[in-house]
Image 1 (cartoon, rainbow, N blue to C red):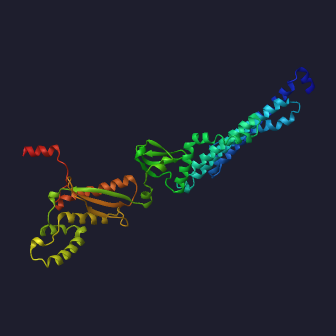
Image 2 (image 1 turned 90 degrees about the horizontal axis):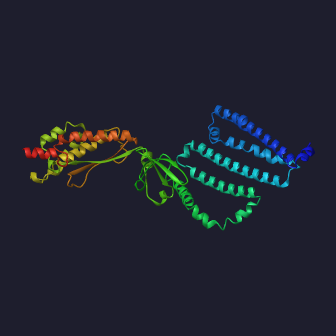
Image 3 (image 1 turned 45 degrees about the vertical axis):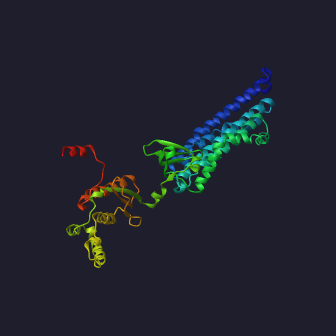
Length: 401
């Protein structure tokens, strides 16, 4: 049969053999990609494990199925003894190069699947490995391309690796950002500086929001207005940024805000004022202690002008402090201060410094607003008035008067 085909044309036996080999490889690929891969996908959907779903998501089985026709052709060349040596060499080189590329792609997909499986674990937010995965993928592709070229040209990869040293300077320049990012990723992970889910603030990049992705080259931050800011990883090492993770982990969020009181409304309290304030439950202990303290101090002083007396601003500070201690949404085990800051052109600042028992933004703003709503409404009961700059209505009433 072979002699008859050769009599027609010398290349005809080779072409017939190659056509049969190609047909066998296509049938094997169809079986592997449709039957075997389909069975693997059906099995993965029925199991409760998640790791096999990750392998299906990144088409690892499909990549392996693409190896089947190349293996059939590579091994089937031994069944064609009459084929031309030059043609056989070209086919084997192309097949080998193809298999190297498929193996490279499969390893890359497997690493993506491994990262996906790892991100589902509890510790993934604290120790992301996506940057390291990308670095390994880069190394795999460099090695894969060297082997691909060596297989395609039928040369030893050692020849290409020997010239690799001479190109080191060029590669250092080309991969400068990658090297910087690699060092930065190692430092970020080693020093536990940033996690996915952290709230960071980096004004120089316009970033203020949650970290949604940490890669080898970039860190993505979703700002509170839902825009995305991309920051080079190595810039988070060289430039300062604020991480609010400590606040989230503490379970309390700080309130640091001031009420500005008109200095002209500060005065001493009269006996009637003190009796009126005794109606406030939060001032009962304060007034009792002050009565005892001032009574002992003033007993040795004959002139009223030299005696110590209660003031409305001091009593208001005590009221505010005890009011905060009574609230169940304010942490008692963290700093709680009500202090008077330096008076200035905008009056006397009374600053509240305390922590809520929640870090939820919406609940935090509600607690803070409730506190200051109450304090601004209660200020006139102490004979005090809030300070604000004169408005157009103030000038109108002044001229009208």
